[in-house]
Length: 366
Image (cartoon, rainbow, N blue to C red):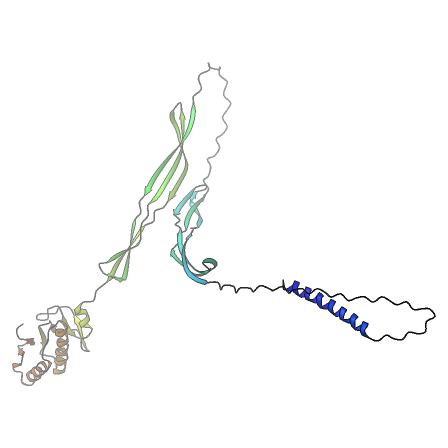
């Protein structure tokens, strides 16, 4: 519309310019002519014609376009992963036979897309993630390649002397049919041991799947009675064994934890001669020197005062770990006085006695 308006205005301006030029020529003084030999003929003067004015056409205003609404959304889709079939030659299987040794299982994976919408309509899709949620189990087929030697051809038989043709008899009716026999192969259970799983616990690592064996026979019938049977095909799908994992990790006991805190030079060992019999026997080198329990410690009188103090300090930790308390200062003071005087002492709630073998430190009331 704008182009047409410019054309109309241009045409009007051109006509007006021409008419104005003609008018100026008419108003200018005449140029004196040369002396003619003949009477000059006056040329008629054209009257200027006013060009009609055209009204310019207004161009309608263009409305502003509405901005599109763009949104995005994350979409997850589950995609099937078909299993593949692997064929392996088997020299123990006759040529022409096949056996499925492992049944194929399809897998799945989750594909994540970022979907773009413009005014509610999908206009773009981009994959941003892919995660396998179920692994594919490939199908393994054993293919027989064993060549069975054919039986040697029999020697030609001599041509028999023709006999008189007997009277014709009715021909037997021979027919064949197929029979299918299916067998189930039960799966076995395999056991694995895991030292990261607590002792006494177990988990199933893989479920078992029964196998199958399908035998197709070609049966020959003569006058309705079976007279022959041949194996046409023998297909076997092996079972997948179940796997059970059994934990062997031993739980650490309170005594095991305390054995790690024994003073340097001491270790935990088995029972020695009386009175070194008990649940927690302490050795120094290869010699039993003490028996520890929450209520009492029996320690050898042969130990030095520093060793007695070290064991007494360990016994206090052992006792506190069992939920009992004791006055530490009373224990050490009683040990010191006993070693100085070799006499019985009772200090506070600690009693210390002796005989030819042991020194006993115990909490009264136990």
